[in-house]
Image (cartoon, rainbow, N blue to C red):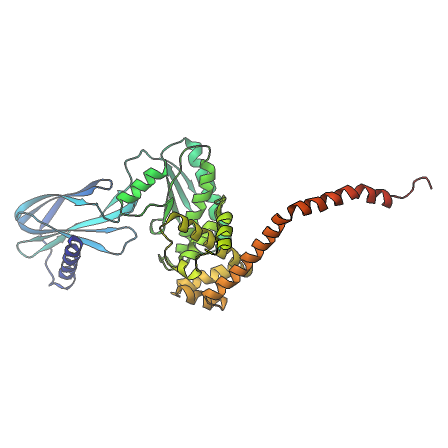
Length: 403
């Protein structure tokens, strides 16, 4: 109900600004406009203003980086020639991503019908619950890696992996490269989960915020950290590159292609991925490709299978059609093709046709592996027999030095 009221208020205020009669500039002086926040709790906006006549109305406006909507809030005041506002805007249930920038401004009306708009100001909404360290690198991309636990080696390792990964992705995928990329590494998944939950987002092992050119991951400072970085950083960078390659449109690329590409770019992928795929193939539990046009399942086991299948399908596409084929698919989706329409347009077959071809390829691979496993003893014996016979063959082929 409160969201409905807020939407109606926003519409009314917007209409008043856009279609209302022109008003003269009011003689209002704004002496202070500021904001501070408690992460995940509230943002407090501060205003002090004076006028030669009574100030009758104060409206607050703000936008969030990467979002198109403008929030408009009428602020209740006592009509006076001087006003002081300290408005606390609750962030509970609000989708404001960590490390986004907010742009805010005020509009004040006076008794004479005048109106004054303040200058726009920015607030950087960082997760200030943690003491962030950082390392930067200036290339074609301005890199910024931020972390909490660990020394400079930890941050530099992450930066090196990111630079190498982006270079590989760009060589294969082409397309534009973001001019600025920031990577935030939380000390563990629990802290990352907390940040996302407080910001109104679902938890994930890592998250790319393409509209911010930012990546959020949770990696403890342990001996396993470099391996985790090689898995998560390339994965999330792929999402950023897909976003920019398709014209900065979120959600237009089917999850099976977006996540499949990201999984393939992992420098150290999940070692259980192939076993999970083989088991589903043997048990007849593979997920229909059409179902992977929608967001992946919430259930952890089903989600892991969805990632494994997507990586396998995209790997098959790369083998059959090359990087150009995948690029053409991305461009089809950038051109607003639907999930199946893009496949038909580029590959000349529908989703079921693609799935059938992929399953046949997967089954063939599985049969080869199975045949090898079932006959490994005989293969080993034959190989050993061949190796043992080599010296005798060699003796026969040598010329007689004493003839």
